[in-house]
Length: 596
Image 1 (cartoon, rainbow, N blue to C red):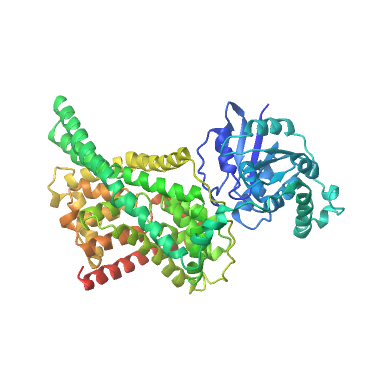
Image 2 (cartoon, one colour):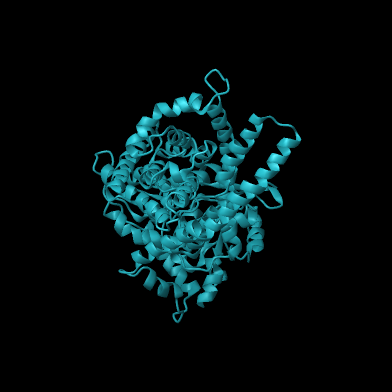
Protein backbone atom coordinates (compact mmCIF):
# COMPACT_ATOMS: atom_id res chain seq x y z
CA UNK A 1 0.00 0.00 0.00
CA UNK A 2 1.53 3.30 -1.11
CA UNK A 3 1.39 6.11 1.42
CA UNK A 4 2.23 9.80 1.47
CA UNK A 5 3.27 11.00 4.95
CA UNK A 6 4.01 14.64 5.80
CA UNK A 7 6.16 15.84 8.71
CA UNK A 8 4.97 19.17 10.12
CA UNK A 9 5.97 21.09 13.19
CA UNK A 10 7.55 24.17 14.71
CA UNK A 11 11.10 25.23 13.83
CA UNK A 12 13.71 23.25 15.75
CA UNK A 13 11.19 20.62 16.85
CA UNK A 14 13.29 17.78 15.40
CA UNK A 15 11.54 17.17 12.06
CA UNK A 16 14.73 16.91 10.04
CA UNK A 17 16.28 14.56 12.61
CA UNK A 18 13.22 12.31 12.37
CA UNK A 19 13.21 12.59 8.57
CA UNK A 20 16.84 11.47 8.39
CA UNK A 21 16.21 8.62 10.80
CA UNK A 22 13.24 7.10 8.95
CA UNK A 23 14.45 7.74 5.39
CA UNK A 24 18.21 7.37 5.74
CA UNK A 25 18.53 10.85 4.25
CA UNK A 26 21.11 13.49 5.03
CA UNK A 27 18.98 16.62 5.39
CA UNK A 28 20.90 19.24 7.36
CA UNK A 29 20.08 19.23 11.07
CA UNK A 30 20.95 21.96 13.56
CA UNK A 31 19.93 23.00 17.07
CA UNK A 32 18.50 26.31 15.92
CA UNK A 33 15.31 27.49 14.18
CA UNK A 34 14.98 27.77 10.41
CA UNK A 35 17.21 24.88 9.29
CA UNK A 36 14.58 23.44 6.92
CA UNK A 37 13.73 26.16 4.37
CA UNK A 38 11.89 24.11 1.76
CA UNK A 39 10.18 20.74 1.69
CA UNK A 40 12.40 17.65 1.40
CA UNK A 41 11.16 14.34 0.01
CA UNK A 42 12.42 10.82 0.73
CA UNK A 43 11.25 7.21 0.90
CA UNK A 44 10.86 5.26 4.11
CA UNK A 45 13.80 2.89 4.69
CA UNK A 46 12.81 -0.52 3.33
CA UNK A 47 9.51 0.84 1.99
CA UNK A 48 9.90 2.58 -1.36
CA UNK A 49 6.10 2.81 -1.58
CA UNK A 50 5.97 5.14 1.44
CA UNK A 51 6.91 8.74 0.62
CA UNK A 52 7.92 11.05 3.47
CA UNK A 53 7.88 14.85 3.07
CA UNK A 54 9.71 17.09 5.57
CA UNK A 55 7.87 20.42 5.47
CA UNK A 56 9.46 23.74 6.57
CA UNK A 57 9.26 24.51 10.28
CA UNK A 58 6.44 26.96 11.02
CA UNK A 59 4.63 28.28 14.09
CA UNK A 60 1.23 28.62 12.42
CA UNK A 61 -0.61 28.26 9.11
CA UNK A 62 -1.52 31.96 8.78
CA UNK A 63 -0.10 32.04 5.97
CA UNK A 64 2.20 35.06 5.87
CA UNK A 65 5.74 33.77 5.45
CA UNK A 66 7.03 31.68 2.49
CA UNK A 67 7.43 28.66 4.79
CA UNK A 68 3.80 28.85 5.92
CA UNK A 69 2.64 29.11 2.32
CA UNK A 70 4.72 26.07 1.27
CA UNK A 71 3.33 23.96 4.14
CA UNK A 72 -0.30 25.04 3.80
CA UNK A 73 -0.32 24.65 -0.01
CA UNK A 74 1.24 21.21 0.21
CA UNK A 75 -1.28 19.89 2.75
CA UNK A 76 -4.27 21.50 1.01
CA UNK A 77 -3.34 20.45 -2.52
CA UNK A 78 -1.74 17.06 -1.87
CA UNK A 79 -3.90 15.82 1.02
CA UNK A 80 -1.29 13.42 2.47
CA UNK A 81 -2.51 10.12 3.91
CA UNK A 82 -1.25 11.18 7.34
CA UNK A 83 0.52 14.07 9.05
CA UNK A 84 3.12 13.38 11.70
CA UNK A 85 3.02 16.52 13.81
CA UNK A 86 6.48 16.67 15.40
CA UNK A 87 6.08 18.47 18.72
CA UNK A 88 8.76 19.64 21.14
CA UNK A 89 7.52 17.92 24.30
CA UNK A 90 9.46 20.41 26.43
CA UNK A 91 7.46 23.34 25.01
CA UNK A 92 3.95 22.00 24.49
CA UNK A 93 2.02 25.26 24.84
CA UNK A 94 3.69 26.84 21.83
CA UNK A 95 3.83 23.67 19.72
CA UNK A 96 0.19 22.62 20.16
CA UNK A 97 -1.07 25.84 18.56
CA UNK A 98 -0.02 24.51 15.15
CA UNK A 99 -1.50 21.12 16.08
CA UNK A 100 -4.97 22.64 16.46
CA UNK A 101 -4.66 24.09 12.95
CA UNK A 102 -3.44 20.85 11.36
CA UNK A 103 -6.56 19.05 12.60
CA UNK A 104 -8.75 21.28 10.42
CA UNK A 105 -7.49 19.77 7.15
CA UNK A 106 -9.40 16.57 7.78
CA UNK A 107 -6.18 14.52 7.47
CA UNK A 108 -5.24 11.96 10.17
CA UNK A 109 -2.75 13.60 12.55
CA UNK A 110 -0.32 11.67 14.76
CA UNK A 111 1.33 13.82 17.41
CA UNK A 112 4.98 12.81 17.87
CA UNK A 113 6.10 14.04 21.30
CA UNK A 114 9.75 14.52 20.42
CA UNK A 115 12.49 15.32 22.94
CA UNK A 116 10.64 13.31 25.60
CA UNK A 117 14.04 12.51 27.07
CA UNK A 118 14.44 16.24 27.84
CA UNK A 119 11.11 16.22 29.68
CA UNK A 120 12.18 13.18 31.68
CA UNK A 121 15.53 14.82 32.49
CA UNK A 122 13.68 17.82 33.92
CA UNK A 123 11.51 15.57 36.04
CA UNK A 124 8.33 16.75 34.29
CA UNK A 125 5.51 14.29 33.51
CA UNK A 126 3.07 14.09 30.58
CA UNK A 127 -0.02 11.86 30.77
CA UNK A 128 -0.05 10.45 27.22
CA UNK A 129 -3.43 8.74 27.52
CA UNK A 130 -5.14 11.93 28.75
CA UNK A 131 -3.44 13.97 26.02
CA UNK A 132 -4.68 11.51 23.37
CA UNK A 133 -8.21 11.75 24.74
CA UNK A 134 -8.16 15.55 24.84
CA UNK A 135 -6.79 15.94 21.31
CA UNK A 136 -8.74 13.08 19.78
CA UNK A 137 -5.69 11.66 17.97
CA UNK A 138 -2.84 9.25 18.59
CA UNK A 139 0.14 10.56 20.59
CA UNK A 140 3.51 8.81 20.61
CA UNK A 141 6.44 9.66 22.90
CA UNK A 142 9.89 9.53 21.27
CA UNK A 143 13.41 10.92 20.97
CA UNK A 144 14.31 11.31 17.29
CA UNK A 145 17.92 12.12 18.19
CA UNK A 146 18.42 8.89 20.15
CA UNK A 147 16.12 6.78 17.97
CA UNK A 148 13.72 5.85 20.80
CA UNK A 149 10.03 5.34 19.96
CA UNK A 150 10.39 5.68 16.19
CA UNK A 151 9.18 2.16 15.37
CA UNK A 152 6.04 2.69 17.47
CA UNK A 153 5.46 6.04 15.73
CA UNK A 154 5.60 4.45 12.27
CA UNK A 155 3.35 1.57 13.32
CA UNK A 156 0.80 4.05 14.71
CA UNK A 157 1.04 6.18 11.56
CA UNK A 158 0.33 3.24 9.25
CA UNK A 159 -2.76 2.32 11.29
CA UNK A 160 -4.04 5.89 11.36
CA UNK A 161 -3.41 6.64 7.65
CA UNK A 162 -6.50 7.19 5.53
CA UNK A 163 -8.75 7.35 8.61
CA UNK A 164 -9.92 10.90 8.18
CA UNK A 165 -11.22 12.52 11.35
CA UNK A 166 -11.81 16.25 11.46
CA UNK A 167 -10.86 17.90 14.72
CA UNK A 168 -13.61 19.49 16.80
CA UNK A 169 -12.81 21.72 19.79
CA UNK A 170 -16.23 21.08 21.30
CA UNK A 171 -14.83 18.23 23.43
CA UNK A 172 -12.81 20.80 25.39
CA UNK A 173 -14.50 24.17 24.97
CA UNK A 174 -18.09 24.49 23.89
CA UNK A 175 -17.48 26.81 20.94
CA UNK A 176 -18.18 26.79 17.22
CA UNK A 177 -15.47 26.22 14.59
CA UNK A 178 -15.91 29.80 13.36
CA UNK A 179 -14.81 31.06 16.79
CA UNK A 180 -11.53 29.17 16.69
CA UNK A 181 -9.39 32.30 16.90
CA UNK A 182 -5.93 32.45 18.56
CA UNK A 183 -7.26 33.32 22.03
CA UNK A 184 -9.62 30.36 21.95
CA UNK A 185 -6.88 28.04 20.72
CA UNK A 186 -4.56 29.05 23.55
CA UNK A 187 -7.38 28.80 26.08
CA UNK A 188 -8.01 25.27 24.84
CA UNK A 189 -4.32 24.40 25.04
CA UNK A 190 -4.01 25.80 28.57
CA UNK A 191 -6.96 23.72 29.69
CA UNK A 192 -5.46 20.56 28.15
CA UNK A 193 -2.02 21.14 29.70
CA UNK A 194 -3.50 21.77 33.14
CA UNK A 195 -4.82 18.21 33.01
CA UNK A 196 -1.95 16.34 31.34
CA UNK A 197 1.31 18.16 32.22
CA UNK A 198 2.96 18.15 35.65
CA UNK A 199 6.01 20.42 35.88
CA UNK A 200 8.89 19.79 38.27
CA UNK A 201 9.37 23.16 39.93
CA UNK A 202 12.63 22.06 41.58
CA UNK A 203 14.47 21.47 38.29
CA UNK A 204 17.87 23.20 38.11
CA UNK A 205 17.89 24.60 34.54
CA UNK A 206 21.50 24.60 33.29
CA UNK A 207 20.48 26.53 30.15
CA UNK A 208 19.42 29.53 32.25
CA UNK A 209 22.71 29.44 34.15
CA UNK A 210 24.80 29.37 30.98
CA UNK A 211 22.72 32.13 29.38
CA UNK A 212 23.23 34.33 32.44
CA UNK A 213 26.84 34.55 31.23
CA UNK A 214 26.60 34.05 27.45
CA UNK A 215 23.77 36.59 27.11
CA UNK A 216 24.99 38.96 29.80
CA UNK A 217 24.52 42.61 28.89
CA UNK A 218 28.25 43.36 29.08
CA UNK A 219 29.84 39.97 28.36
CA UNK A 220 27.77 38.61 25.44
CA UNK A 221 29.46 40.55 22.62
CA UNK A 222 33.08 40.16 23.88
CA UNK A 223 32.47 36.41 24.30
CA UNK A 224 31.18 36.24 20.74
CA UNK A 225 34.29 38.04 19.42
CA UNK A 226 36.61 35.70 21.33
CA UNK A 227 34.76 32.63 20.02
CA UNK A 228 34.96 33.83 16.41
CA UNK A 229 38.69 34.51 16.82
CA UNK A 230 39.29 31.04 18.28
CA UNK A 231 37.32 29.39 15.45
CA UNK A 232 39.59 30.81 12.78
CA UNK A 233 42.74 30.65 14.88
CA UNK A 234 42.28 26.89 15.29
CA UNK A 235 40.91 25.99 11.87
CA UNK A 236 42.86 28.40 9.65
CA UNK A 237 46.05 29.45 11.41
CA UNK A 238 47.23 26.59 13.62
CA UNK A 239 45.87 23.04 13.59
CA UNK A 240 44.16 23.34 10.21
CA UNK A 241 47.21 24.98 8.65
CA UNK A 242 49.48 22.09 9.69
CA UNK A 243 47.13 19.56 8.13
CA UNK A 244 46.77 21.60 4.93
CA UNK A 245 50.53 21.97 4.52
CA UNK A 246 50.88 18.17 4.60
CA UNK A 247 48.12 17.66 2.02
CA UNK A 248 49.47 20.36 -0.30
CA UNK A 249 53.23 19.83 0.06
CA UNK A 250 53.49 16.09 0.70
CA UNK A 251 50.38 14.41 -0.69
CA UNK A 252 50.01 16.47 -3.87
CA UNK A 253 53.44 18.12 -4.08
CA UNK A 254 55.48 14.92 -3.66
CA UNK A 255 53.51 11.69 -3.74
CA UNK A 256 50.88 12.40 -6.40
CA UNK A 257 53.26 14.54 -8.49
CA UNK A 258 55.90 11.77 -8.44
CA UNK A 259 53.36 9.10 -9.28
CA UNK A 260 52.00 11.18 -12.17
CA UNK A 261 55.52 11.82 -13.48
CA UNK A 262 56.29 8.08 -13.41
CA UNK A 263 53.03 7.26 -15.18
CA UNK A 264 53.58 9.89 -17.88
CA UNK A 265 57.13 8.61 -18.53
CA UNK A 266 55.84 5.04 -18.69
CA UNK A 267 53.32 5.80 -21.44
CA UNK A 268 55.68 8.12 -23.31
CA UNK A 269 53.48 11.18 -22.96
CA UNK A 270 54.60 14.35 -24.70
CA UNK A 271 55.95 17.43 -22.96
CA UNK A 272 52.67 19.29 -23.41
CA UNK A 273 50.74 16.49 -21.73
CA UNK A 274 53.16 16.45 -18.81
CA UNK A 275 52.84 20.20 -18.39
CA UNK A 276 49.03 19.99 -18.51
CA UNK A 277 48.88 17.20 -15.91
CA UNK A 278 51.57 18.51 -13.56
CA UNK A 279 51.04 22.27 -13.72
CA UNK A 280 47.45 22.47 -14.93
CA UNK A 281 45.60 19.70 -13.09
CA UNK A 282 47.75 18.65 -10.12
CA UNK A 283 48.90 22.22 -9.51
CA UNK A 284 45.44 23.79 -9.90
CA UNK A 285 43.07 21.15 -8.55
CA UNK A 286 45.55 20.01 -5.90
CA UNK A 287 45.98 23.56 -4.64
CA UNK A 288 42.24 23.86 -4.04
CA UNK A 289 41.64 20.39 -2.58
CA UNK A 290 44.67 20.92 -0.36
CA UNK A 291 42.59 23.28 1.77
CA UNK A 292 40.03 20.62 2.73
CA UNK A 293 41.58 19.91 6.17
CA UNK A 294 41.07 23.54 7.19
CA UNK A 295 37.56 23.55 5.78
CA UNK A 296 36.66 20.30 7.54
CA UNK A 297 37.94 21.62 10.86
CA UNK A 298 36.05 24.91 10.37
CA UNK A 299 32.82 23.07 9.57
CA UNK A 300 33.34 20.76 12.55
CA UNK A 301 33.64 23.69 14.98
CA UNK A 302 30.68 25.54 13.45
CA UNK A 303 28.58 22.35 13.65
CA UNK A 304 29.41 22.13 17.35
CA UNK A 305 28.19 25.70 17.90
CA UNK A 306 25.02 24.99 15.92
CA UNK A 307 24.15 21.69 17.61
CA UNK A 308 24.98 22.98 21.09
CA UNK A 309 22.43 25.79 20.74
CA UNK A 310 24.87 28.73 20.83
CA UNK A 311 24.34 29.77 17.21
CA UNK A 312 20.80 30.95 17.93
CA UNK A 313 22.21 33.04 20.80
CA UNK A 314 24.57 34.81 18.39
CA UNK A 315 21.56 36.01 16.37
CA UNK A 316 20.02 37.27 19.62
CA UNK A 317 23.24 39.05 20.65
CA UNK A 318 23.70 40.69 17.24
CA UNK A 319 20.08 41.81 16.97
CA UNK A 320 20.84 44.96 19.00
CA UNK A 321 23.72 45.80 16.66
CA UNK A 322 21.86 44.96 13.45
CA UNK A 323 18.76 46.87 14.51
CA UNK A 324 20.75 50.12 14.62
CA UNK A 325 21.43 49.58 10.91
CA UNK A 326 17.86 48.70 9.97
CA UNK A 327 18.11 44.89 10.08
CA UNK A 328 17.22 42.27 12.68
CA UNK A 329 19.20 39.42 14.19
CA UNK A 330 17.42 37.03 11.81
CA UNK A 331 19.65 38.30 9.00
CA UNK A 332 22.57 36.73 10.82
CA UNK A 333 21.26 33.20 10.15
CA UNK A 334 21.67 33.43 6.32
CA UNK A 335 25.14 34.88 6.91
CA UNK A 336 26.23 31.92 9.02
CA UNK A 337 24.78 29.45 6.52
CA UNK A 338 26.57 31.36 3.73
CA UNK A 339 29.90 30.63 5.43
CA UNK A 340 29.39 27.12 4.08
CA UNK A 341 27.70 27.95 0.77
CA UNK A 342 25.93 31.05 -0.47
CA UNK A 343 23.06 29.15 -2.14
CA UNK A 344 21.39 27.78 1.05
CA UNK A 345 22.34 31.02 2.79
CA UNK A 346 20.30 33.00 0.27
CA UNK A 347 17.43 30.52 0.48
CA UNK A 348 17.34 30.71 4.29
CA UNK A 349 16.40 34.40 4.03
CA UNK A 350 12.82 33.14 3.62
CA UNK A 351 12.62 33.06 7.41
CA UNK A 352 12.74 36.90 7.44
CA UNK A 353 9.16 38.21 7.41
CA UNK A 354 9.95 41.82 6.43
CA UNK A 355 10.22 41.97 2.61
CA UNK A 356 12.72 44.85 2.61
CA UNK A 357 14.98 43.13 5.15
CA UNK A 358 14.72 39.89 3.19
CA UNK A 359 15.83 41.55 -0.05
CA UNK A 360 18.76 43.28 1.63
CA UNK A 361 19.82 39.99 3.24
CA UNK A 362 19.60 38.15 -0.10
CA UNK A 363 21.83 40.77 -1.71
CA UNK A 364 24.41 40.84 1.10
CA UNK A 365 24.49 37.37 2.69
CA UNK A 366 27.17 36.26 0.21
CA UNK A 367 29.47 39.00 1.47
CA UNK A 368 30.42 36.43 4.13
CA UNK A 369 33.28 34.32 2.73
CA UNK A 370 31.94 30.86 1.83
CA UNK A 371 33.95 27.63 1.72
CA UNK A 372 34.96 28.41 -1.87
CA UNK A 373 36.45 31.78 -0.83
CA UNK A 374 38.30 30.44 2.19
CA UNK A 375 41.20 28.95 0.16
CA UNK A 376 42.18 32.36 -1.24
CA UNK A 377 42.08 33.83 2.29
CA UNK A 378 44.21 30.98 3.64
CA UNK A 379 46.63 31.13 0.70
CA UNK A 380 47.32 34.85 1.09
CA UNK A 381 47.35 34.76 4.90
CA UNK A 382 50.10 32.13 4.83
CA UNK A 383 52.12 33.41 1.86
CA UNK A 384 51.76 37.20 2.17
CA UNK A 385 50.89 37.84 5.82
CA UNK A 386 53.16 35.19 7.33
CA UNK A 387 50.30 33.31 8.97
CA UNK A 388 49.15 36.31 11.05
CA UNK A 389 46.22 34.92 13.14
CA UNK A 390 44.33 38.22 13.04
CA UNK A 391 43.97 38.48 9.26
CA UNK A 392 41.37 35.73 8.62
CA UNK A 393 38.99 36.85 11.43
CA UNK A 394 39.39 40.45 10.26
CA UNK A 395 38.13 39.48 6.79
CA UNK A 396 34.93 38.11 8.34
CA UNK A 397 34.60 41.23 10.48
CA UNK A 398 35.06 43.38 7.36
CA UNK A 399 32.32 41.33 5.65
CA UNK A 400 29.87 41.96 8.49
CA UNK A 401 30.75 45.67 8.47
CA UNK A 402 30.10 45.71 4.70
CA UNK A 403 26.66 44.17 5.28
CA UNK A 404 25.77 46.76 7.92
CA UNK A 405 26.97 49.65 5.76
CA UNK A 406 24.98 48.23 2.84
CA UNK A 407 21.89 48.05 5.03
CA UNK A 408 22.29 51.75 5.89
CA UNK A 409 22.78 52.67 2.23
CA UNK A 410 19.87 50.60 0.91
CA UNK A 411 17.50 51.50 3.76
CA UNK A 412 18.02 55.18 2.92
CA UNK A 413 16.42 54.65 -0.51
CA UNK A 414 12.68 54.54 -1.16
CA UNK A 415 12.88 50.98 -2.51
CA UNK A 416 14.02 49.58 0.82
CA UNK A 417 12.40 51.86 3.39
CA UNK A 418 10.36 49.93 5.96
CA UNK A 419 9.60 49.76 9.64
CA UNK A 420 11.79 47.52 11.79
CA UNK A 421 10.05 44.21 12.36
CA UNK A 422 10.03 42.78 15.91
CA UNK A 423 12.67 40.11 16.50
CA UNK A 424 11.11 36.86 17.66
CA UNK A 425 13.30 33.78 17.80
CA UNK A 426 13.27 30.64 19.89
CA UNK A 427 16.37 30.01 21.97
CA UNK A 428 16.77 26.21 22.15
CA UNK A 429 18.04 24.32 25.16
CA UNK A 430 21.80 23.84 25.33
CA UNK A 431 22.77 20.26 24.65
CA UNK A 432 25.95 18.27 24.15
CA UNK A 433 26.20 17.44 20.43
CA UNK A 434 26.68 13.84 19.33
CA UNK A 435 30.18 13.32 17.93
CA UNK A 436 28.83 11.19 15.06
CA UNK A 437 26.49 13.97 13.94
CA UNK A 438 29.24 16.60 14.12
CA UNK A 439 31.54 14.62 11.86
CA UNK A 440 28.64 13.79 9.54
CA UNK A 441 27.71 17.47 9.12
CA UNK A 442 31.33 18.51 8.60
CA UNK A 443 31.93 15.73 6.08
CA UNK A 444 28.76 16.56 4.11
CA UNK A 445 29.89 20.15 3.63
CA UNK A 446 33.50 19.19 2.90
CA UNK A 447 32.38 16.57 0.39
CA UNK A 448 30.37 19.20 -1.49
CA UNK A 449 33.49 21.34 -1.70
CA UNK A 450 35.60 18.43 -2.97
CA UNK A 451 33.00 17.53 -5.60
CA UNK A 452 32.94 21.11 -6.84
CA UNK A 453 36.73 21.19 -6.93
CA UNK A 454 36.74 17.87 -8.76
CA UNK A 455 34.38 19.09 -11.48
CA UNK A 456 34.33 22.87 -11.91
CA UNK A 457 37.97 23.38 -10.99
CA UNK A 458 39.06 20.40 -13.09
CA UNK A 459 37.45 21.88 -16.21
CA UNK A 460 38.56 25.41 -15.36
CA UNK A 461 42.22 24.41 -14.87
CA UNK A 462 42.28 22.65 -18.25
CA UNK A 463 40.73 25.73 -19.87
CA UNK A 464 43.17 28.09 -18.14
CA UNK A 465 46.16 25.97 -19.17
CA UNK A 466 44.92 25.80 -22.76
CA UNK A 467 44.26 29.55 -23.00
CA UNK A 468 47.65 30.36 -21.46
CA UNK A 469 49.51 28.13 -23.94
CA UNK A 470 47.73 28.93 -27.22
CA UNK A 471 47.35 31.93 -29.52
CA UNK A 472 44.07 33.00 -31.10
CA UNK A 473 45.08 30.81 -34.07
CA UNK A 474 45.42 27.84 -31.67
CA UNK A 475 49.18 27.71 -32.22
CA UNK A 476 51.60 27.13 -29.30
CA UNK A 477 52.32 30.41 -27.56
CA UNK A 478 54.56 32.04 -25.05
CA UNK A 479 52.91 33.66 -22.03
CA UNK A 480 52.68 37.15 -23.56
CA UNK A 481 51.28 35.83 -26.86
CA UNK A 482 48.58 33.68 -25.33
CA UNK A 483 44.81 34.16 -25.46
CA UNK A 484 44.71 34.42 -21.69
CA UNK A 485 47.27 37.22 -21.66
CA UNK A 486 45.27 39.15 -24.23
CA UNK A 487 42.03 38.91 -22.24
CA UNK A 488 43.70 39.49 -18.87
CA UNK A 489 45.76 42.44 -20.12
CA UNK A 490 42.61 44.04 -21.51
CA UNK A 491 40.67 43.96 -18.22
CA UNK A 492 43.63 44.41 -15.85
CA UNK A 493 43.50 48.26 -15.82
CA UNK A 494 40.07 48.05 -14.20
CA UNK A 495 41.68 46.64 -11.05
CA UNK A 496 44.77 48.87 -11.01
CA UNK A 497 43.19 51.33 -8.51
CA UNK A 498 42.70 48.34 -6.18
CA UNK A 499 46.37 47.40 -6.27
CA UNK A 500 46.18 44.21 -8.36
CA UNK A 501 46.10 45.56 -11.91
CA UNK A 502 48.10 42.62 -13.33
CA UNK A 503 46.64 40.24 -15.91
CA UNK A 504 47.20 37.19 -13.68
CA UNK A 505 45.06 38.60 -10.85
CA UNK A 506 42.52 39.96 -13.34
CA UNK A 507 42.01 36.52 -14.89
CA UNK A 508 41.75 34.86 -11.48
CA UNK A 509 39.03 37.37 -10.53
CA UNK A 510 37.22 36.80 -13.83
CA UNK A 511 37.19 33.01 -13.48
CA UNK A 512 36.13 33.46 -9.85
CA UNK A 513 32.84 34.92 -11.05
CA UNK A 514 31.96 31.47 -12.39
CA UNK A 515 32.98 29.69 -9.19
CA UNK A 516 35.05 31.17 -6.37
CA UNK A 517 37.10 27.96 -6.15
CA UNK A 518 38.70 29.07 -9.42
CA UNK A 519 40.59 31.92 -7.74
CA UNK A 520 43.29 29.72 -6.23
CA UNK A 521 43.21 27.21 -9.10
CA UNK A 522 43.85 29.96 -11.68
CA UNK A 523 46.71 31.54 -9.74
CA UNK A 524 48.36 28.13 -9.26
CA UNK A 525 47.89 27.11 -12.90
CA UNK A 526 49.49 30.38 -14.01
CA UNK A 527 52.41 29.76 -11.68
CA UNK A 528 51.87 32.87 -9.54
CA UNK A 529 54.06 33.11 -6.43
CA UNK A 530 51.70 34.96 -4.12
CA UNK A 531 54.45 35.89 -1.63
CA UNK A 532 56.18 38.13 -4.19
CA UNK A 533 53.21 38.91 -6.45
CA UNK A 534 51.11 40.69 -3.80
CA UNK A 535 51.88 43.37 -1.24
CA UNK A 536 50.00 43.48 2.06
CA UNK A 537 47.70 46.20 0.72
CA UNK A 538 46.99 44.57 -2.65
CA UNK A 539 46.52 41.11 -1.12
CA UNK A 540 43.96 42.38 1.37
CA UNK A 541 42.16 44.39 -1.32
CA UNK A 542 42.13 41.28 -3.54
CA UNK A 543 40.51 39.27 -0.74
CA UNK A 544 37.97 42.00 0.03
CA UNK A 545 36.91 42.51 -3.58
CA UNK A 546 36.49 38.82 -4.33
CA UNK A 547 34.60 38.29 -1.07
CA UNK A 548 32.10 41.08 -1.66
CA UNK A 549 31.63 41.13 -5.44
CA UNK A 550 29.05 39.18 -7.44
CA UNK A 551 28.91 35.58 -6.12
CA UNK A 552 29.22 32.44 -8.24
CA UNK A 553 26.67 31.63 -10.94
CA UNK A 554 24.85 29.14 -8.70
CA UNK A 555 24.34 31.78 -6.01
CA UNK A 556 23.13 34.31 -8.60
CA UNK A 557 20.56 31.75 -9.76
CA UNK A 558 19.43 31.38 -6.13
CA UNK A 559 19.15 35.18 -5.88
CA UNK A 560 16.95 35.21 -9.00
CA UNK A 561 14.71 32.53 -7.51
CA UNK A 562 14.33 34.26 -4.13
CA UNK A 563 14.03 37.84 -5.39
CA UNK A 564 11.44 36.73 -7.94
CA UNK A 565 12.53 38.94 -10.85
CA UNK A 566 15.42 39.46 -13.23
CA UNK A 567 15.30 43.20 -12.55
CA UNK A 568 15.93 42.79 -8.81
CA UNK A 569 18.66 40.22 -9.50
CA UNK A 570 20.45 42.54 -11.91
CA UNK A 571 20.24 45.33 -9.35
CA UNK A 572 21.63 43.02 -6.65
CA UNK A 573 24.58 41.84 -8.76
CA UNK A 574 25.39 45.40 -9.87
CA UNK A 575 25.21 46.65 -6.29
CA UNK A 576 27.41 43.84 -4.96
CA UNK A 577 30.12 44.38 -7.56
CA UNK A 578 30.04 48.17 -7.39
CA UNK A 579 30.12 48.15 -3.58
CA UNK A 580 32.97 45.59 -3.60
CA UNK A 581 35.04 47.80 -5.92
CA UNK A 582 34.58 50.94 -3.81
CA UNK A 583 35.12 49.12 -0.52
CA UNK A 584 38.27 47.36 -1.78
CA UNK A 585 39.61 50.69 -3.06
CA UNK A 586 39.08 52.30 0.36
CA UNK A 587 40.71 49.35 2.14
CA UNK A 588 43.70 49.41 -0.25
CA UNK A 589 44.29 53.14 0.21
CA UNK A 590 43.81 52.90 3.95
CA UNK A 591 46.44 50.15 4.31
CA UNK A 592 48.84 52.10 2.08
CA UNK A 593 48.32 55.19 4.23
CA UNK A 594 49.14 53.17 7.35
CA UNK A 595 52.31 51.91 5.68
CA UNK A 596 51.63 48.31 6.71
